Length: 181
Length: 200
Image 1 (spheres, rainbow over the protein chains, first blue to last red):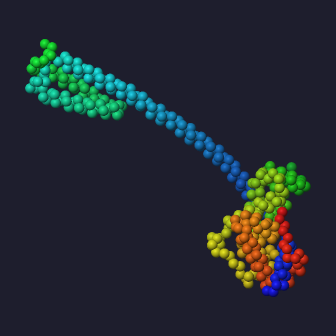
Image 2 (image 1 turned 90 degrees about the vertical axis):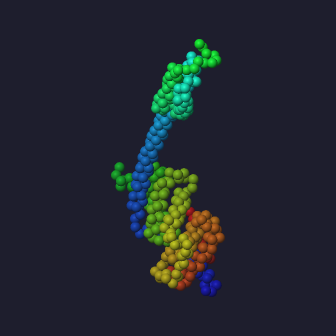
């Protein structure tokens, strides 16, 4: 292409650009499609507003439910703690009373039945009972609400007292020192 | 009030009044605005998208977007300028949305020889240009945007915009030369080869 030709095409292109219409009519009416989309977008906006209201309501309900449940759970978790601490106090009190009772029995011991020939199985039984009672006591400190443990613990204590009392009725050798009689 | 009477009254309103009514949700007023501006918007969309179907869809999208955005129009700029900017963005968005998967990776090359002789003006040969070259040419030469503005709109560099513009020029000249467009429809140029910008 010669330089003159290029210049000519360049200027002719400029002419085309200048003559290009600013407006072109579409081949079909586009308004109907626009109107449909406007209605649709309005419908969607209304729906979106409604769904937003529902969403807010749902969030509020969930928050309320969570609050109520959380409060209940917190209260119920606090209740066992309060109850548990009361039970632990009772546990310690009962243990103390039992120890005092055992001591009292020892003090009231008129004879040294432990030196008796029949005392070995009894001593062994009391020893085992005390070991069991101690283990149950520790378990009860961990779970003071366990009724079965309570019953077992109280039984071991009662049995210990019973055995101690039985021991006192055994044929005995008089105490060599500090006897009351 | 009947719809016809309402339309008759709206037709007598000035554009600012139509805008005010349309902002309040008056669809009849909005339709009047459409009637006034849709051919300008369609021309822009057709030149940017390069396809009639896509241009129609983009034009509709422009007016739906306009309806949604109209409450934000404060009258600080001219309505036509504001609408023009909205339309350019919407048309570019349509092109991007409909661009084929492979077109993102493979450059579109136009086959000059395949162009038919049926064109009679610039718009016919514009449609034969590769997408990017066409859009740059339309925005710079026809719509009056600077290369920096074109670059910003298209997400390319100003240098790329210039290169694409020159590419478009050469391709258009080839098309004109091969198909004797100049002899058929155009008289001698009278503006010294300088393109007149018509940006709003």
